[in-house]
Length: 315
Ligand code: APR
Image (cartoon, rainbow, N blue to C red; front, side, top):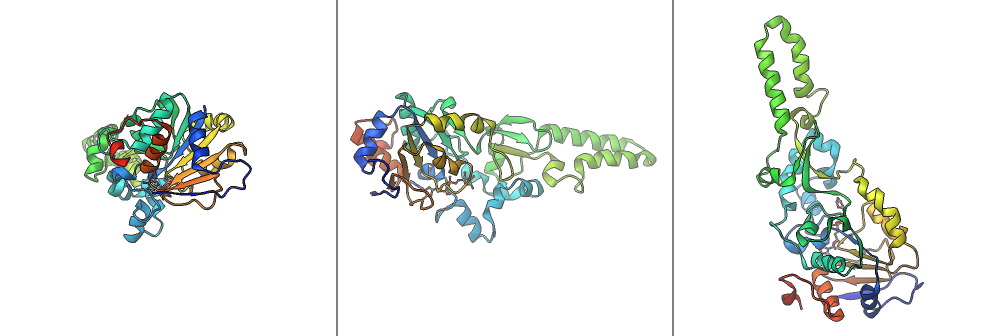
């Protein structure tokens, strides 16, 4: 079920499962860094493994699959993003045993923070206190108009997302319809001037397609956007206070989240729980396997019970 490897130069006497179990039980400020691998057991693909998003898009001929999450590309052609966005929508109210473990840490008062790179918002479904979760790459919880920034609850556009349709901003639609009516009401001589005002909203010359039509975008961090302020407001203090770092279900390929491992104090134990090894970073312990199974195994060894219906079948 699992392999334990240690790669970090042994500054610490911390290289066995027993060391890990003892650390999880006794640490008071555990920083948990999570990625797409913790949601795959719900059928939400990760990005870079063999069945991941990016692998699928490459197979469909997209040279650089990260384009899907590129802001400039989205502005020109939002349909690519909306052709795959439905794959990230989690089943209503679901979460995994791994999310249940993070909730258990919060209940025990030992979760300093969960920095998640995931946008599926499953942490909220698991009941992890919101002040303990930092969604480094935003989430589907809300969506905003790319033109007028009008913000709505994310589920308002889930229907369109499920049907791979472009969700448009209701205000920009109204504004556009009003402009069209005003132009039609004018005589020919005045039409020239107002065409300019129409082109302000409808033009494909100065404004991108998405901006011209007021396309709604889930409030997730696209490449080309900065991370949410809450990440920068908390990370400096959190890496100082962290007494155990758990990296779970992530390839640690995307900065600045991937740089967290270099920011915690050197004497702090660093653990990877992941299906594949992460070779560009040294961990005191890499526990390799499926994270739900591994976490249930560790909790069983600690006498802890994760509150999740799937736990018994994983024992
Ligand atoms: N159990 C444990 N590990 C798993 C499981 C599982 N059930 N399923 C997948 N994994 C591992 C994979 O082996 C992989 O190393 O999770 C990791 C997921 O890595 P990525 O697909 O690169 O996802 P992530 O690290 O979250 O990507 C970070 O990249 O494009 C951006 O914005 C996107 O937030 C994302 C960021």
